Length: 459
Ligand code: F0G
Image (cartoon, rainbow, N blue to C red):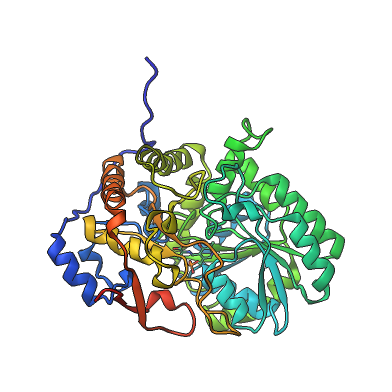
């Protein structure tokens, strides 16, 4: 008999979690103004709000913490981290930052200016925020296929070479760099193929422009290249990683995802001019160049995390679990962005809550229903998160409206996944009775989803 799949680790430390009653959840959600970001973690049973900084570190990582060197300048920990990054990526210059958006802030302070245009594939919201905040434009050149949630193609995170070429023809003189997000979080944790990265590189070269990778989930991207792109099945994750980054000039990294740490980030590049240009901003915003917002011990844990998470077994365990949730949703007929992505399942909310009009935010409504059903906290990646158009101030309803169920790394078992799937099925089974969504009572001008206050439309 073929042995079934099992995790490539065993558990050494546990943390109790508790389920609440529906009545308690009704009250807590109302107190949180129907915004799950405003809930206390203790009010949540299974927390899928993000896979960022929520993973479990290994025994090797905890051991590495003890070797941290907390010297202000020139810490050993920095050089250990830098060596791992250089070995994995080929990038010689490394600037640590306290998280991914800080890396964006430091690098973009040097690279992005008013009136610039930065083409790429579905810029993440902080990336877009750092671009738009500098009065520049984040131009989305993702392939159109990514918008059809039911279409099954292997590399749905790709940049459209046609759209990118057109953008360069029109605006090349305003483009400081091209950004590629691997994996493409906003499009559903969807990977970008090496072939596509090569096409982007070729266009960039023709126009003499650098390429930056937003690399938060680069290892998951490498996993999909190995398992889906022809010619890579026999290559190691580390070899593929090296080949991917060989096509970029530099990277910004949120280490809270594929670095397997709870906090951290960095910039790495082969370009001396980027390093020289950005380093002053690191000192100004983050800290001295060899710690930039990280403790020495955290740099050591990250060095180990990067090494571990570029091994196939670890990635296989993780992505297999995300695929397992997808398989359950397939059984129940619940529509999500296909195929399953690397870090999350994105449920296509308007296809589930067909009676909730877009003005009443279907994905937010589904997020609330799932929490009320079983204390499971997902998050809306949809019309609320899309913010208003900076010029017209109208809501942006032109993208997808998704409920993201992000799976933390090495945290939940497949039994938890069974609970998540069953809770979603219960909501799905009563979808016809959900006819009202929410309206906004208060919102911030940018990144409103974190703090928005809502009320029910039928109240
Ligand atoms: N880039 C991508 C693709 C991201 O997904 C994130 C964060 C960032 C940059 C910013 O990194 O949080 O360390 O400052 N994504 C988290 C999420 C928050 O839930 O998807 P950060």
